[in-house]
Amino acid sequence: MKRKFLPVLALSLLLSACTAPIQPTPTSEPTSVPQANETLLAMDTVMQLTVYGDNATAALSAAKSEILAMENRLSVTLEGSDIWKLNHSEGQPVTVGDDAVFLLETARDLGDKTGGALDVTLYPVVKAWGFTTGEYQIPPEDTIASLLGRVDYTALSWEGNDVTLPAGMEMDLGAIAKGYAGERAADILRDNGVTSALLNMGGNVQTVGAKPDGTAWRIGIRDPQKSATDYLGVLSVIDQAVVTSGGYERFFEEDGVRYWHIMDPKTGAPARSGLTAVTIVSHSGALCDGLSTSLFVMGLEKASDYWREQGDFEAIFINEENEVWITPGLRDSFSLTQNSGYTLHIVEE
Ligand code: AMP
Ligand code: MG
Image (tube, rainbow, N blue to C red; front, side, top):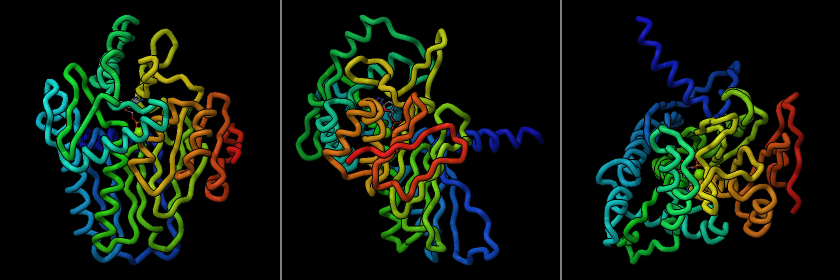
């Protein structure tokens, strides 16, 4: 009998391993709004989808189908996916779906704007460190140097849906695909008449509208130094994506040094920018996801400059000095937990 509880335990551990919605406090008046729930494993993540309203069940089913279909098209490991085909194309053009093209365009745009901090062709380096298999290792410097010679997102080209990846290169959309899946799922829910939903996709949270009672969703921002359920603060959002990249999400330790899965394409090693986690808030899940990864790589100063230049998102930066820096638009929606041990700062406009 005991065995039965193991998957439940594993599931709850996974769910709590990231930025997550804080469970609503029960009120004296339970909501009478119909609700549909689904937990699914997709894109290497346990996803919890909660949809409210009369059409909740049908809408949720449509959103779930789209997430699974996107995984089939965009997974780097699944044989026959668009990305798998590109990685096995030997430099020949491959016809891919619209979502892959959209993500390639988004990733190239973000790559250009972040000075190459986001590079979807970093995959051979990520593989060499073992982050794709869990067989972690610190690759020799000459291996990294030679692999970096095969990293350059500007070498990818496409005409319409025909994409060419030069022979010898490999790519992965893992840094932005999940955010886009959340965004697409939210669009499908809205198309199906849904005005209130919460999609918890690991470090990515996508909201549709407000809670059924009209109040904002409350999202816990994890303390990077503590366990998964320790929040250093809470963020209130309505109809936004909230995506976090943290050094605590996937890592290994050797000789007391922590090596994480967010890599600096300039060094081919885990990004050491002084930041321990970055949360991005915006209407676009894909933008949030791409930026949470690349601004982590860039560090507080350059990331703040980027925000001042672009300004189409809000951000929470957490650094090694136990400081939490928020952009001014979050002043009223973010609050530190009491006795968090962190100090709160506002990024200058
Ligand atoms: P995220 O969890 O969204 O921050 O994405 C991290 C994942 O994207 C890693 O597991 C790698 O597969 C990949 N990745 C790591 N660093 C980069 C980078 N600088 N640019 C693009 N992809 C990256
Ligand atoms: Mg990301």
